Image 1 (cartoon, rainbow, N blue to C red):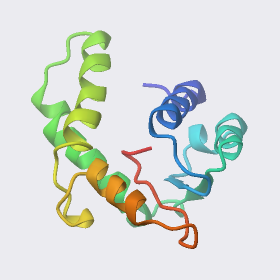
Image 2 (cartoon, rainbow, N blue to C red):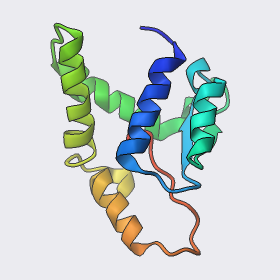
Image 3 (tube, rainbow, N blue to C red):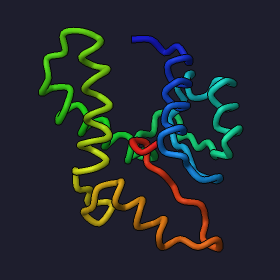
Length: 139
């Protein structure tokens, strides 16, 4: 495992391409060097995404991301015996998009999956409302 920013930057670009967040969307992360580096911040700014970071050592400020990683570990990682990097490349996006975002009910979203919640929010939003906050797993 590496903290090389290039992986995080590529993941961010892929997420932006797939999710097409609105200008003003808030990206919440920790203070990891990969999220604080100039290249990563520049991509956020280029797409009108606001960076928000938790205070150092305070996982409670990023509870959605912490909850996602707990779920990800218990419902995907610990249940699979990845043999190769190709196994990871195949399974992780499937879990995030087809299970976590599309099927898994989330109590914090009124017991609907994130994709459904996002669609409901988009349908109900008006230009006078503030920009939506996308959770870590969605972005």
